[in-house]
Length: 467
Image 1 (tube, one colour):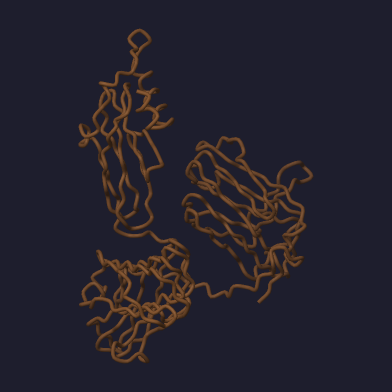
Image 2 (spheres, rainbow, N blue to C red):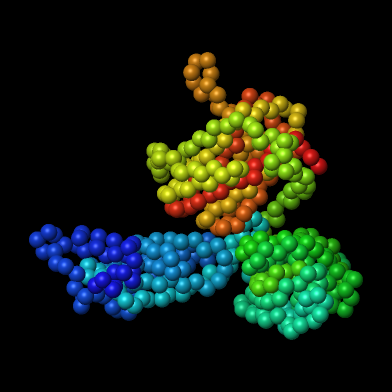
């Protein structure tokens, strides 16, 4: 038995032993029997996996058997003994889960492996036009196999390896390039467009390594100078899908369109994923709500440690509200301050917005005439949706001892999504206080977080507006 328990580790041992204790009374308790350890394959049909392809939530169910507990193993490192649970998968792809079977005698040596597929990536931000729509000209067209020009230092080498599966291209760029147009991929089509119409286009791009110089060009296959757009400098964060899109493009008379990508200036070992390509007549409504584009230019930021950063040298107090699902308070999460970096550890999950607040109450003030710029970088160890970042007037206590709330007097109230292990810059430009502020608070809310989530807040800048 020692061999088995040391293999499964402390968590599984606890699960199995807890089960055996609750399953037997003190009078009939017997020690574990190695011969009674379950055989995993016997329980193949007790495992059910249901994928909601609309929401990307997956339900894992173990149909209960007397005296048996499942041990779900995700990615070889996350364990659960739940009989039913849900997990969220944001990115398209094939996934698997291993299941071991436990009873009072121990845990199976073998395991059951189940695979499932997520069809579509759910984006942070706009996800593009509807790939599956009958209006998508791309899915109805004849698309030639891609051609490549791969030339690190302008010396051509062998084409990169690529795969095409269910409309998704994956390109493996084994060698680094140092200039635009050194890693081209082109696809000629039989799609024709007309000058009398307007068109919509979108594509989702993902890079396994951060890439700041992707180019997308939609062009006449016979004339490189006759194109709808040639967008350079598209920035991709590592493993973070980005939708590049254009709407209501004036039509051009083209007999055969060509779609060109360039990944020049890529790092060695970069995998590029190209998916959900859509081209459609703008007059055909596929139900997509096109976002309003914020064309506010990003300001010029002062250095974080500059005297022009108003956040430097101010006096502040950190406050917490960390609550259970019934809104009763939990103990405050751990906070570690390292220079201009603030690291929070949330051991327990919260159920909804505003149940995990963290704030800076400062001695900074604001009038209604001065315009400010704000910048902060966030990082989370887990995907978090609808994180609140709010720069607002601090509440105060009136002469009668009652709290005077100023929730409605704020510079901005942003909602952002955080992707696990990826930095997210949140900023606002040229914002003014609607009413004078006697004191300013910076409020974050991570409500809805999963258990064992760590969040880092760093490089906060508050400056008078700079173009």
